[in-house]
Image (tube, helix red, strand yellow):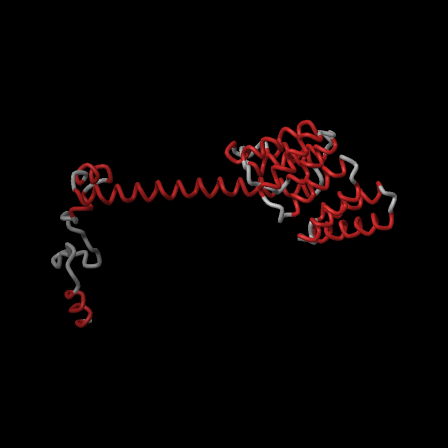
Length: 252
């Protein structure tokens, strides 16, 4: 018991009164630490002129601003990814009108690109509106003059419109860009087909296949030309290859 009493006497005396009859209670002194005397507003008011305090407050505000900004950026990126995923999903399901509607939800800065205009042109081509398709493909070339991707379908649009002059202009235009890409040979093949040079057209499409054996559209056009020549066995051969490539593409 004496040991316990001596141990208690060794604790720091936070207002403890040895003479108090209530030996089991502890009273706290009215002398509290200075920081505990102020409310939050009073603390801010009292120390607001302190340079270190101002620096800390500014730093915290800046960090919160950056954090909020990052959250907004992340949310916008997620929204864009969701839209592009929806676009690809609808394209794979051949829902071209729905694809155009989703594209209209993209930010204007994304829409005003050669890639998106070419994609819209392809959608209108697939639903049979070659007039609108032509307009979007022309704008795509203006927006991205060195972009070849998609122009093979543009050449088919011009073939359907029987526009020899514009198709020849497209041949010359892409020739000046490169002759080492399959798109150029597709465009040349479509022009040759339009002017009834069927064998030359087939040779052009075969050159596209030689440059890229996975270029699905070249097989389809080869098949169509062989159908025109009533060579159905060769047409089936190219069509089967095209279907096989399409199925393999859709798996991914």
